Length: 209
View 1 (cartoon, one colour):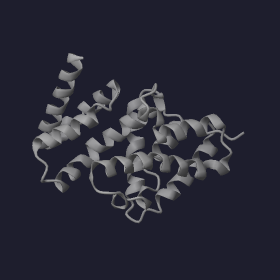
View 2: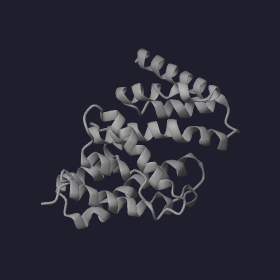
View 3: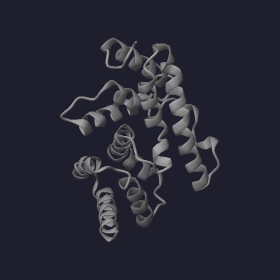
View 4: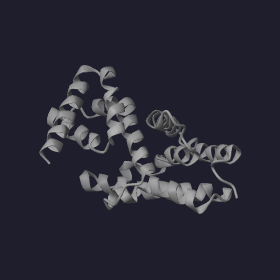
């Protein structure tokens, strides 16, 4: 049986997923997949990533360009529905694309569940692969996206930004927080102060629990 532990099978799986990313006319999906994999490798060091972790990570935004935010209602409820449904949509795409490889059911299930994030949504015991992907996604946001996002929402005041960053920071595992802290010196002053304040508020809340 084919398995992602086999280099040839893993390479074929990666080629299949990346071919789907290349359908994105903006080219952003492939860039995102590369950034996620970069942080996955940082998070698991000194050990190597396994094939399941790489493929699951590279599927995080699989064909997201086909389901833009604008296709859902405005407001917080619409945004949350978009995010929740995307998890399942992306997981379904991964299963469909990988099915010709006849991978073991356990590998396919781990990839699907990590992308779909079902355990996060029901607050069940979170699988390590799900946690790893969540950490990598947050690190990509903080390192590659938050500055651009901030410039797109100049109408947001500091309180709103602190809230956004706090909700993002609290998703991180301890290892994820350690790696995220290393990003602070590279941030511009205004953004760094917002992140530092959000981190301090999260620490205060945890201390009071």
